[in-house]
Image 1: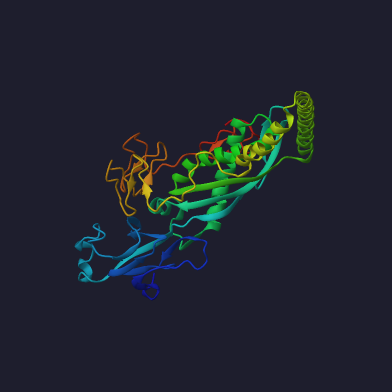
Image 2 (image 1 turned 60 degrees about the vertical axis):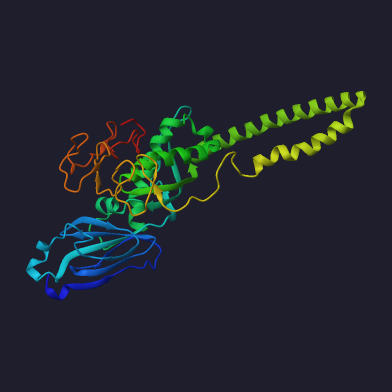
Length: 376
C-alpha cells in the first residue's frame, strides 16, 4: 500500500444511520494508522474491538477511552520505539452494534424433505422471523466478520437462514410424526426450535431473543388432507356441543320441577365470564411481565456481573470470549493451539455432513438431510 492510502486517526467514533449495521470498521477501506493516545468514544448500545497486527487484543465497553498501554497492555513501549513513543499504530477498531435487531426473515429457499408417518416423503416450505443480538462482540468479529469494513443484517441473514432451516428440518423429524397434526403445534415448534438454535448462535457470539414460524406450507394435495382433518374435528366438537346442550336442557327441566332452577341459573350466568376471562386475557399464570433491568448474568454461575467485567467476580468465569473450541465449546485463550479441556486443535473447523443416500452437503451436526429427509 502506498502512503497516500494511509489514514491518520485521532478521534474514533461511529453512528449507525441505517439501523442495519452490525459491525463497522475504522478505517472502512485501505490501511489505517491510529495515533498512539487517540480518543475512542463508545456509546451505550455499542462495543469496540481493537485489532493490532491483524489480531483482536481488547474490547471496550461504553465510555471514552484513550488508546495507550494503560488500556491495552499488549502495546508495550517496544511497539512504539521506532517512532519515538508518539507515532501512529497500524491497527483497526471494529464498532459492534449491541441493540436487538428485530424482524429478520428466515425461510426455505428450496422445499425441505420430511418423512411423514401417514403421507410418506413430502416436501415442505416454511418461513418466519427472528430477533438477534450480539452478546459477545469479540467472538462475533473473530468468527463471522473477518476483515469486512461493514457487516449488515443482509450479509448475516443468508448464513443464519441456512442454519435455521437445517435445525427446523431436524426438529420436525424428531418431534412431528405427521403434519396432519401440525396446525395445533406452531407455538410448540417455535419455542423448541428457538431453544435448539441457542447453542448455534452462541458459538458466534450472538443471542437469539425470539423466533417465530409464520407458516409451514405443504404441497396442495397435502394441504387439502389437513383441511379435511380440521373439518372432521369441527364436526366432533359440534357433536360434543349438542350433547352438552341436551344435558343442560335436561338438568334445567329437572330443576324447574324441583323449584331450584332460577337462582342457580343466574349464579352460573355470573360465574361463566369470570371462568373464561383468564383464557382470553393472554396472560400466563405466574408469568413475570416486568421488564428486566440492565446488565447481565454470568453464564456459569448465573450471578449478576458488571456490564464491563471481563471475568465473573464470583466464580472467575471468562466473560470476554476470543474463540470457542469447535468440538466442546470451551472458551479458548487468545493464542491457544489446542483446547485445554478436550485437546481438539483450536484452528480446526468441523466438517460438513454428506448424506449417505443423495450426497447432499449438510451442517456438521445435522440429523436429517434437507434434500431427501434421510438420517445423516
